[in-house]
Amino acid sequence: MRPDDSNLAGNVHGGIILKMIEEAGCIIGTRHCNVQNGDRCLAALVRVEKTEFLSPMFIGEVAHVTAEITFTSKHSLEVQVKVIGENVLTGAKKLASKAALWYVPCSLKNVEKIMEVPPIKYASAEQEEEGRKRYEAQKMERMETKARIEEAVAPPANPEQHTVGFSQSSLIHLVGPSDCTLHDYVHGGATMKLMDEVAGIVAARHCNTNIVTASVDAINFHRKIKKGCVLTVTGRLTFISNKSMEIEVMVDASSMVEAEMRKYRAVTAFFTYISLDKDNKPLPVPSLKIESEDEQRRFDEGKARYLQNKAKRLPLFLVP
Image (spheres, helix red, strand yellow):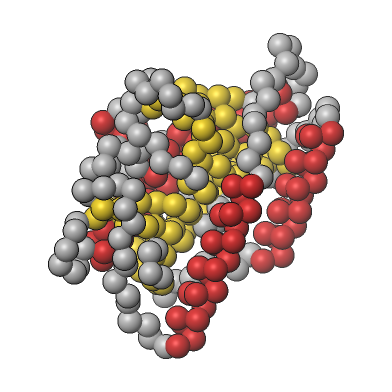
């Protein structure tokens, strides 16, 4: 991890970790889907389950990213990824992050064509059944999330401090070749890095302190983003507990060259951030001032997610 991988406080940026996780998932997914003869394909990211940032990483540490395919359906596969941080001076290692990602293989000849996924061998029938349950659950949640898509409202001209409008932030990004896959569509990891940057700005504006990514709820990729599109990445606070902030991030895309392509919602997710003091200890978060019925509704929904996640706190997979 180098200086350009870090945030202002010297911690490795959460977006960098997300990008590495997605790259590992894409590599193993693409490699697996091309083990058979026939049309070549590339694994495209469609969803990231809850990502947990368990330990911060710092400049000079080495990140070991490992990925394993844990379930396959006819047209999709689940990849579980973990990131181990190593201090090469002391030899100490720590589990930094973990996530589960879902991919579908798209033909290199026709990006709209979804290829079949070669099956994997499971250690037991129970392992296969557990994977099938995760597959059905994420499929249902993706459909429900798509149905809840709503527009981001522009903040007022002079918002009061600690309101939703005060910290709401947007980033404009033109998709270039370095952001894209062999299909000329955006890498999921590049999009997640932008989303984490916007969420970090929102959290810092609200707290005015050092902040870090604690976790990311499911990231849903609703539609592909092509090279040449302009991305508008918007983040807004939805819920605050005593020591954490939930930030909704939305990615809208529009084409600069295809006039008939209207602006559309491409990706959505909820990021959780915490505020830290100079010794990297959690600080209380300023309360959020609610100004509308919509903000109250989003706050109540965020509180429900917070309590649900707090009750679960289960690992995505066991670490040996």
